[in-house]
Image 1 (cartoon, helix red, strand yellow):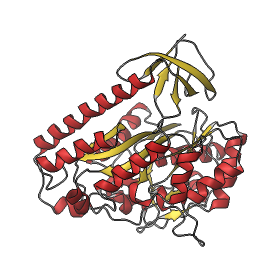
Image 2 (tube, rainbow, N blue to C red):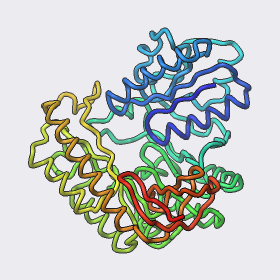
Image 3 (cartoon, helix red, strand yellow):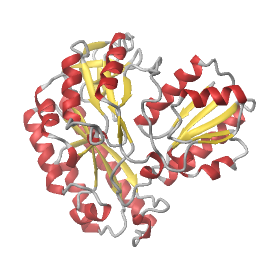
Image 4 (cartoon, one colour):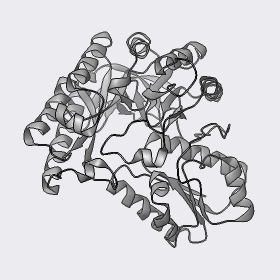
Length: 413
C-alpha cells in the first residue's frame, strides 16, 4: 500500500486514519493520494503525484480524496490512473471503504454539497512513524475569504464534540504520545455549532485538566480575530501549552485585509503578539502571508514586511498569490506575475533572516526536545534541533545548543 499526503495537518490526520481503516479491512494493492487545492501549484502537484505513483505501482488500485479531488471530481475521474474518488464528506466513513473493498466499485463516492460528519469513525490513527499525534477537532469553515477555495471542498464548520475529543486524547496518551496537535480548517471556530457556549479555550483547558500525563499540547493555525480570553489565559499561564502559535495573518495592510475579507486588523495582530510575548517571552510566532494579492501596491506590501518585524515572527509560510476558480479575488485587478515572484522572494529572504536571528538567541541554552527521529527533534517553540548521538524517537530530552546552521540548531554531544 502507498499513501501520499499533500497540504495541511488536517490531511495528515485523515491519511493516518485511512491507513488504520484500510489495515483493519486488510486492503491490498492500493495507492491513496490525499490532494490539496490551496494554490494552483498544490493542485498541479496532486495530479503529478497520482501519475508518478501509478507508474511506480501499475497494479495498485488508485483512490484519491482531499479538497482538490472533491472540488474537481469530474477532472480526476477522467484521469486514466484514477479508479475511485472519495468526497471529503465520506473519506473517513468505514462503511464506504468496506463497500469499495467488497465490490471493487469505481467512480465517485460522496455528495455534491459537503455535509461533514466527523464522528462517523471511532478509528484512532496509529501514527506509527510519528513522534506526535494530530487530532482533528473541527472541519470546514464558516467564513468566505475572497482568495480561498477550501470551503468548496470542506463545507461549513463542523466541530467534534468535547467528549469525543477527550476520549481520543486519553487513548493517544495511553499509546505513549508525548505531544498532541489539535488540528482542523478553522480551529478557533470550534464549538460554534455545538450546544452550549464552549469555545476553543474551554476545550484546551479541559484537555490539560483531564490529562495531567500529557506533557505537550500544541495548536495548528489559528485566526487572529477568534482567540477567546480563556485561550489567551492558557497560553500565558500553562507551560504544557507549547509556546508556539501559528497565525493566519495573510497581510499587514488594512485595506488588503478588508479586500481579503479577513476579520482582523493590522493593529489587532500586533497587539495580540505583544500581549502574549510580554506574558511568555519564550513564545514564538509563525504566520501565513500572501504576496501579490490583487490590488496590492508597493506601499501595501511594505506594510506586510514591517508587520513581520513588529510581531517578531520567526516562522513564515509564504504563498505567492494564486487565483483560484470561482473566488471573488480572481475577479479583482491582478498583480503581474513577475512582481508577485519578486515580493515572494523578499518575504522568503526575510523569513530566513528572522529564523537565523531566532537560532542565535537559543545558542548555549538547554531546550526540552521531543525527538522525531534518532538524530532530530523539535523544541517546545517548534525549533528543529539535531544531535550526533542517537536518541529514542518519541521521547523528550534536555539538549544544550552549541551551534546552528541555516535550517536548524545543533545539540552539544
